[in-house]
Structures are given as structure tokens and as C-alpha cells.
Image 1 (cartoon, rainbow, N blue to C red):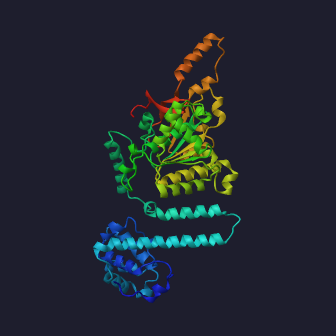
Image 2 (image 1 turned 180 degrees about the vertical axis):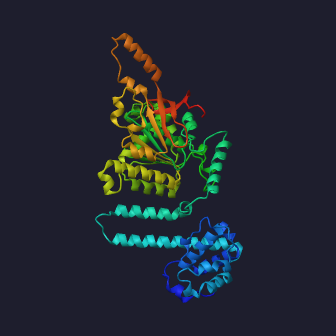
Image 3 (image 1 turned 90 degrees about the vertical axis):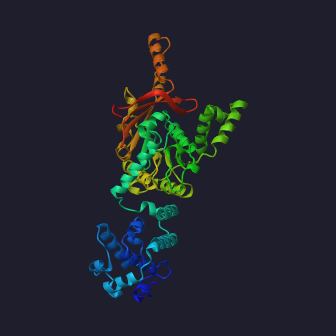
Length: 496
């Protein structure tokens, strides 16, 4: 163990905070003796984890020189260490580096010392958050509600909890390349399967490769097109396919395993969403379920379906009027408590921003919301599917298929989204154009068009950052609000 530290170091510390300068000395000495140790600890241990400023500077120097391929010893480090503020108070660079070498931990134990330093740093951060919380709680502020303080604390706690994963800064190209090859290998192992979460719609999955982690996916359409029904169907499919026993701790879910889903329903209640799912699975119209207009046989089927699907890890938050900060805090909380693989937000325009400036300007507010949703998708490493309304200008065109310009406040939505999907049903608009049966020729043409369009919905991929755009036709059963596959119905660009 190292000699007692110089008194000046002790005087610099708050003795109530957990720290272990001897462990820091032992690790730094081990690094001077064996530079290869950095390969084991450099992935998670950062200068800010050291309690002593001198130790943090020394570690940063060593990391920089080792990264350049230099051999780092007490002798080669000395010219650089002499410039570190405060090292003269410890006896000078030469003397202190000698003390580090003498205090060096065995190479086999170096990782344990690094973990100790890392864990103590996180404990200090927790103390700082707690101290800040006490001050905030004791000092009422007209501009900060109790809810704001709680959200900030939750965010800080989550950052500490996930610091090892998300606080690593730059990722070397070799590591990024390895992740890319691993993703391709996983898809290849499934015979050309998916690298993301399956939606339950085969042709759509083939176009998207599944729902990809960290992607912001916008699903938009005019009222009555079935946005919520499609999002609910996808969310339920992902949750129903979840197989936790087949996934090792820390391993991302495989597409066939589904995942844990958080559904933020700002428009419909949790009961309404559950009724839609049960209706689709039991093949009983939801309006009949609501009115109790079902037979004993149908009620028995409802109970059977409910028993089969009740364990699906689908969490519904139907709180209205959420801000983007509140949504993010709740998403972090559910990931920390249960795990999380997909977020669905229904719908985008019902969220509100957190800053006064954004709330005074709707375009700025939507920009804040979509920017934060994209950042949250990256932070939690999950796909986020956000539903969006379309402007009324769609109704003024002869061809009412949506376009990117139809997105409300479309600039930020289109820019931040990785994927933009539109849902369109020609049958919906044809019903509104029903001619009089007395106009036989016109009525016959209308009937033919209705027959072609009956039960068919189009999912239009208007933007895909890493793949083709195109159109997929899917089956839509209106009475059950259920989506499914058609047989041969996908338009894919040549070369796909």
C-alpha cells in the first residue's frame, strides 16, 4: 500500500465524500509499469472519475500518450507531468511519479482498482445530486415547479445509472465497424431476417429491416386512416413476441424476440387501447364489446384472448398534456425498472415543449419536441414511433395520398425523422364519393373501385434515411381495426 498521502491532498478534499486516493495512486503506478492495462480500463474509466485533480491530469496524459503508441514510464512522462498544476506541492513530478511506481498495484488486480475508482466517482455524483435536490427543495422558485425539480433529478439519476453506456464519448471506427458487422451477422443468421424489431407486417419489415434502435419513426395520416390502430398493432406484436428467457442480460433483443414496449397515449385511454387489441385478437367489433352486444360464445372468446395476452410487456401511459421532458423522464424510469425496447407516442401534436419561448411559437415547439425525441431514441438506444397529424391541404388534392410537405410544421419533423411512414386508405375517400344508384354507369364504376380498394391500406415509406422508399399494401379489417399481410403487394425499387 502507498505511503500516507501528503497533507496538502487531504486538505483539498471534503472528508464526507467517498474517495480513495491510494487506489488512484496504485492504478496510476500500475499503468506506468504496464501500459497494456489501459486497454482494459480505458473503455469506462475517465479522468473525471478521479477524485484528485493531479491524478486526473496524470491519467489523461497517460491515455493520450498510450493512444499515440508511446511507451509511458515514469521517465518518459516526467517532462509532461512537470507542467501539471499542483504537482510541485506534492514534492515535484520526479518524486511523485516515483511514489506512484512504488505504490503500483499488481497487473492482475488493476481492473479491480479501476472499478473501485469508477464506483466511488458515481457515489460522489449521487451525493452532488442529493445536495442540489435539498437546495432546490428548500428554495421556492416561481419559474420552477416541484415537477420540474423531480424531472431534473430523475434525468440526472438516469445519467449516472447509464453513464457507463452512454458517457463514453467518441467511438473508434473499429468499434463502430464491429457493431455494424455484428448487426449484419445477426440478420444473416436468421436467413436474411431482420436486424430490428419486427412489426408483424412482413412486406413492411422487408423494406425497413424492422424497427431499428435509435431511429425516430414518424407514422402520419389524416383522421380515419388508422394511425392509432396500426401503431397499436405494431406495439402489441412487439410485446407479444417478447421472449426474455432467450436473451442474455445486457444483450439487445433479437427481432424474433420482440421487446418491452412503452405506449404514450395522449389521446385515447388505456382501456380504449386494450379494447382495440382484444377486438382484433378475438375478431369481435370493438363497438359491440363496448355496448355489451356480444353472445356468450363471443364473451368466452374474449376471456380466452385476454388470458393469452395479459402477460405481454406492453406498458400504457394515458396521461394527457405531457411535456417532452416528462415523457423522457418516464421513459428513462421504465427502462431502469423494467427494460425498454420500443416507445410509441400517440400523437406528436399533443405533446408540449418545456421552454416558454417554444410554447409561444408552435413551429419552435415542434422543433424542440422532435429534436428531443430523436435524442431520446439515441440515448435509450430504442426505436421511437411517433404518430403525427397531416394538414388539411391533403383534402384539396385529387390524389389524396400524403406527401412529406403535408406534415404539420413539417420542417423539423421531416428533418429529425429517420423514417417517415404515411398510412392511406382509398376506400375511406371512395365511401365519401358514393354516387346515386340512379346514375347506373357511374355507380357501377364506383362499385368496381370500392371492390378493388376494399380492405386494403397503403403504408407509404416517404423517407428512409438508410433504405429505399416505396409503398406496401396491407390488409385492413375495419370492423376489428386489424392490420395484416396481403400476398403479393409490395412495390420495391429496382436493385433492392
